[in-house]
Image (cartoon, rainbow, N blue to C red):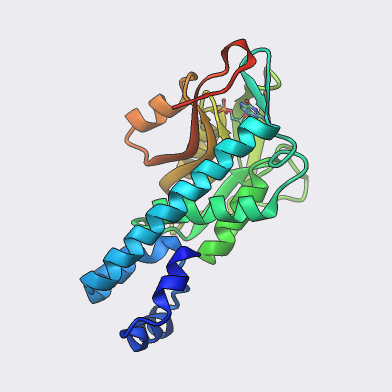
Length: 247
Ligand code: 5GP
């Protein structure tokens, strides 16, 4: 939003219009790299970069403030955010977070967003909307009508039990370059389930983006050590004594 205000009135506005026309760009944060590589206009890029930094900080600040204001830290290292993410949802914050995730994965050629129902669907659909690509969610029930089913097991941290998730191989295949999006990263079990489904389908995993990572659990470290590009908008280092400490 800061970026757009600064773009208008620039002498090189005609160039921006050309960029928009030929690259279908809407000057969302994720477009910086493509702009740079196509046109190499240092002046424009610098301004845009500064603006992006402001947007980035603003969104991260908003999310952290919201967690502190409306989140509830429960026993057992669980953060309840059903005021704005998991039950009642704040679409404005959700959209801003999605844009920021898109920006962070701008170097990847993503043609499909994946998530697991239910709480991953809202952020995933916002990211899919920004990228203009389909969003596929792994289902927790195996429908009898599903063709070409791919199945895997996921252990749920919050429910303390394993469950089966599935997707149709009709919607996930060799040509797919997948960005996985979820609300939380804890021990990484949901993420590992998706890795398995992507592998079964012969698709490519481009990266994994989360709204909130609980840095005191092992998922982030494990996924990153496998060489996966992982991004989290807010990382929590501790929920000890029911108080939230950010990294
Ligand atoms: P993981 O599979 O990484 O162990 O856990 C991630 C999944 O469990 C997410 O899809 C999320 O729905 C749920 N989850 C894990 N920790 C929390 C938490 O502290 N709060 C909430 N609301 N969900 C969590």
